[in-house]
Image (tube, rainbow, N blue to C red; front, side, top):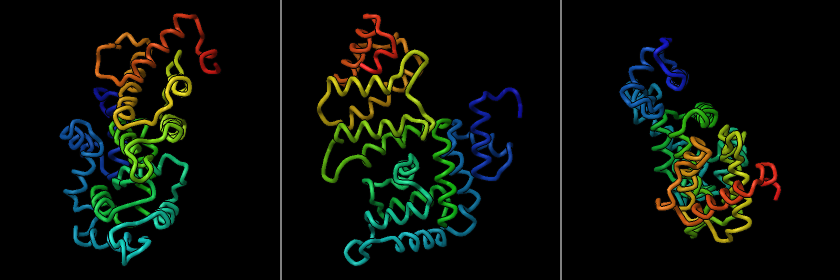
Length: 275
């Protein structure tokens, strides 16, 4: 592989080749055409190759057949897989309920909430991934879950979809304790994405701060902006980039002040973790 490619580009070339069983030349061609976005490049390549090898009609037929197999109530809810069907489907995908792969499935199939799949989201999601059999779907989900740490755009989409998965039915926000558990899952060894820098255990600080200062639920804006703060703090843990006049939620403004007060007071990261 030419030395002109960055390490990140080399990783994306390998990911593309793994998903498509294609060579480096195709990988570079499609990745460059899609600004090095792996998902878009893979989807473009597979669509030109005829998807999973059959016609689009055959793929749709196969996917609808799989969907129908897991429906809880075919008469009253013909286009919905409910909780029981979702449990069986995830088990067949070899996905554990406490694994980050559950969130990957939810994002891929645009699940409206945890334990529910719609026919449109199911069919469209798997057609986009050109996968129309259970065994192949299990392989794709496993590969996507393994790539979260090396694929920031995918991780960001999974993170954002998690808000919908974490909400209780009919609620506009996520309960704080549930949000914390999902943050611990997303920013963990299980995802490969850690929210910590050499001198700043950000996730632990965030959880401690919320326990001390925040007793409300977590709305979508707070959830999404926490991701943006995560991304910036991972680039520069000093917070030199912080602008208190920026469009951040007040809870994140308060968190930054809390961290700075702790640092100026001479508390070490270790002490801040256990206070």
